[in-house]
Amino acid sequence: MKYNTLRKLGKFGAEVAPIGIGAMSFTNFYGPCNDTQANDVLTAALDMNLKHIDTSNVYGAGKSEERIGEFLLKQGNSANDLFNIATKAAIFTDPETGKRGFNNQGDYLEKELDKSLKRLGVDFVDLFYVHRRDSSIEIEEVTDSLSKLVQKGKTKSIGFSEIAPSSLKRASKIHHIAAVQSEYSLSTRAPEMGLIQTCSELGTALVAFSPVGRTFLTDKPLSYEIAQSLDFTKVNPRFNQPNYEHNISISDKFRNYARDIGVPSATLSISWLLSNGEHIIPIPGTRSVEHLKELAAAMELDMTDKIKKEIENILPLGWAYGDRYSDAQWIGPERY
Image (tube, rainbow, N blue to C red):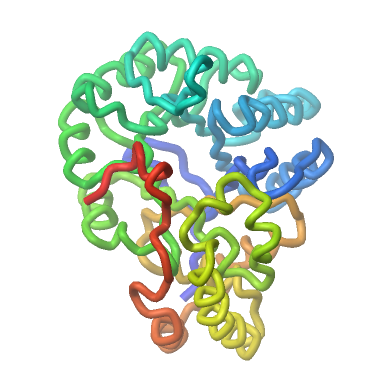
């Protein structure tokens, strides 16, 4: 089966291509990115009708949003007609201690959204997420604050990142949650323990970030040396030894299988995700137009039951060595 029909961002949201663009790659998170690379990817995304773009106020301290805004300004069309834009807020860094914290207060979220709108050069976004939950504020109160931003016309819909199915159910009693963002891939399958199902029941899109396993599910995974040079991966358990070597060795079998059937590993990874539910929208990030084409090709791949079974035999549930986050990185996401 192919997965090239449009998917909805929530019950009342826009219809978008099954694959979106994760714009954290427009910063230096996984390696250097410049304006030209970001512009080339955005141009190619428009050409391929990949119009859903996901960014955040903290990606490169606003740099991701600025690059998107600069691109939109050059197009001459109404910015909101070109892309379906999602952004996020709630994460901040204390200037005195340097420690990361979370703020879910309504006035704070609105001020941060206003700054994002200015950087993006738009009057509203299509989707505004709470990036991380502040557990000191009940999710019902946070949802009510977000609903007021919809009423004011600053966002068309609302969502949460990295929340548990139980939290989604509570929030949905206050206002429809268009999307929940969660890490989901062949190497991280926790959403299968209730989040996929709850999203489906409530008409909520599951927006899957890191859908190619932070490169482990591609033909060119990060080398150990490069991983150790990047702030996120150098402390991430899956990229530290001996876990790194185990993960490369196991995922090599997946790369070999993809090669045997004549497709890039990233294409196969994304197609597997798309096959798990019509409400699942992966948002891979890339600085390369060539890689973007590999990712988009997943929509045209005929994912048969036989291929899917063979993939899951090669990479069975729980195959990855190491937790997906370090102890410090786990502060914020809701476990379930």
